Length: 498
Image 1: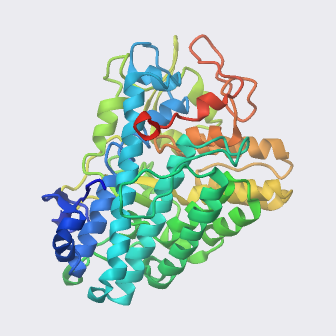
Image 2: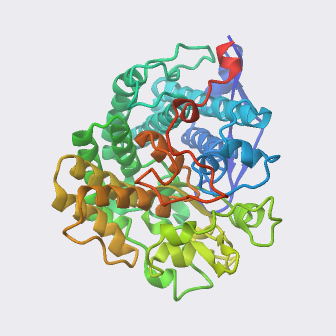
Image 3: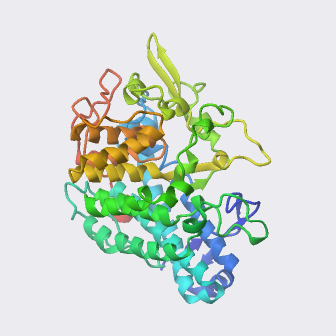
């Protein structure tokens, strides 16, 4: 049996796991159960272990870079890379045998399963030592951890698993619900989803539905004072609504439109959700230029704390960077992506203009701003991973597939109007609605790692023959007019297959 380790994170400061520092690692093996018993002998110990898992999830190996604005967006053809000698170019060209690419996906695989293993340790200890927790604490921690485990497994499936629409029974990834670091069989994709992920999420929804403060009290993004912050800052936790969106996302992946719509409507049709996660206030975007909420943070269901979020902009997107290092869209792309300059996302996430040599735009979604260092705005240190707009896109697509054109337009236009646009006309065709849904993912989720998965789900190319994308023709454009299974299925790391 391999030795595995559990991160222990100590909280300092007012925010819930907002300012964290790692203490010594806690070995958890059969020979030192006493150490584990000490860790989980108090309520504080359980919540510290939970924070350790969230810290793993937000690391650069996972959603702090690799699974957000880094390799995944390069694979989604979000940027133009000219230098063939760079790692960015290798990701963009799907060069799976490049040494850095191989190392990156090995890191994703190992880090995700390490986080899953830590989750399983917490789940085991919950049932062995739950006498130290209240019923609410027990249900809340268990619901969060089960949902987060499904979240990690599903993204591994979307990366390393088959193109589901082509071969749903093909081998995908192992499912781990144990506390031993043992090699496990790769499950068929449909079996993993139907027998593991969906039941886990159903369980999580029941637990969180009973215990999650977000349902009755909202996001609670203020300091709890003497009562502490363990049950607060619900956007930094995998809460009930995030579990519903994940379930809708999974059902959509397998083209189960009835169930995907039912889960999405738990967000889109719930008036309480619109109160707890309101659409961004335009005054926070346009009039308030020194303090803009470019992340539309009020709409985010789940994300993580990132102290130096502005470093993303300065390291990858700033116009002051060398031309071979900056990540910028292809010339003409922004004009094609945004049909109206009134779009809030065009105004707040992009800066630049047409020039004599073409358009040059910088992606400023993560650019820093003048903030109150004593009491910074919540979005100043927040990186969003799941947002309510996706629920509307899912609902619109499901209605479209069910030939319910009226509701498809209603769901889609709700977001378009919340972005300062008029929305599609009632006479819009099914093809026009579907194209607009796809375009919305490209406008809305830049930097969040979802665009490559959109292409894989539809098994689509990137050139002019693809009706769901902007026309990306031109000498600078990598032309992949026709999709390829090899492009969309990342090889399983060799240390797992050998």
